[in-house]
Length: 114
Length: 116
Image (cartoon, rainbow over all chains, first blue to last red; front, side):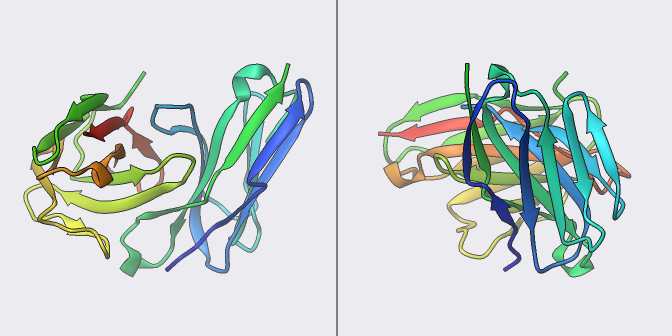
């Protein structure tokens, strides 16, 4: 099946530091989404990307849709304790046969030292 | 605010009983909803696509007789875990897209099922 390789698997960073995570695939996607999930809750959409090369910001978060349409990254600037959680990338394939379903990365666990 | 809501947020049941989880789109009509299952510290695994007015489409390896899905209206999909067993204990999450939007997928709060 389709796979997204998300890295790093986990991060333990100092408060105030910038964070970067990314997802890559051998498949071409027409949409990239980044979600954050807190323990015991559903994922919350952070940023949606629709065009190759697109760079979008949401507060301290910035994400880019890779030119090749096979990758995306998420940056968090000046991390704070509430940034703790699991971040998932998700891609929607351009293959009609796949029915607009999303493929999820394995997640990046972010832990922040206060 | 939330655009997709699930109920209950958690449920504990005895082995052999059936449990129903509801998923509602709050401010839009969703012809398609998705049901996911998530194990601790793992990613979301798509179980099935719920289609309003027709049968759900199940992913490979998901038992349709075990996980009954009913999408009776444009704002409500239900997942029933039949004859639940401890191995069915998991976090179940539903999602939906706004009409005419093939991109952003909004998730419910999730439902934690514990089968004793």
